[in-house]
Image 1 (cartoon, helix red, strand yellow):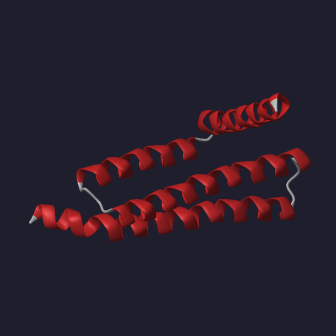
Image 2 (spheres, rainbow, N blue to C red):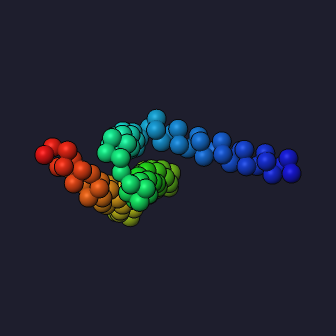
Length: 123
């Protein structure tokens, strides 16, 4: 039993280290965290519904995961080769595209949730 707990503790430490590494080394991830804080504050300010919170939290989750997967793919490609190769470029470009798609769709979701509330508060 103690060995299982130790294994989980070690796994959690590795996960934490990966998260901290991403924050320290990835400016885009820090930007997404800033956007996350902004959206959460907007959610509290506009008293969004439970369903809207679910959509927002899921969307935030997808963007942050996409950014971390992108970082992982770029690191693995760099580990394999630092040469300028077309297949390495494609891998990096597609993973960056994944982040772009998730961020654009997250922006659309935020507009759907918040724009009506913002327009009502302005009128």
